[in-house]
Length: 107
Image (cartoon, rainbow, N blue to C red; front, side, top):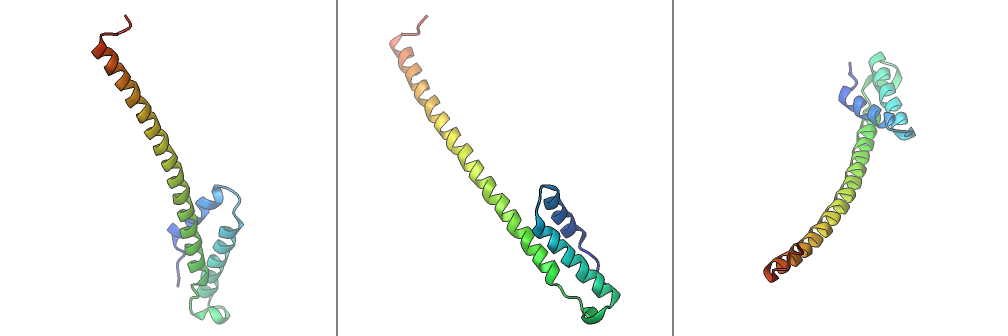
């Protein structure tokens, strides 16, 4: 008897909860069907056919890779903005140092 992989199903359902994604829904159905047919001993499913499970794993990996790529782009943009702000602060700091050295505190 084959058991459904609870972690795999949870990860796939999380994607479905995040929006309209027909692909994981189809893959979830294929995986569940393969497990059910195998467990019932129906027809050619005497031996468990992992195709649906493998496709679901592959889809989740591709989905996660896409998420990581998007996160990387966001982080790089945040780093660029922080670097620009840091440069601006460095220039302001240099100007303040020059004013202090010249005794021009603007008081």
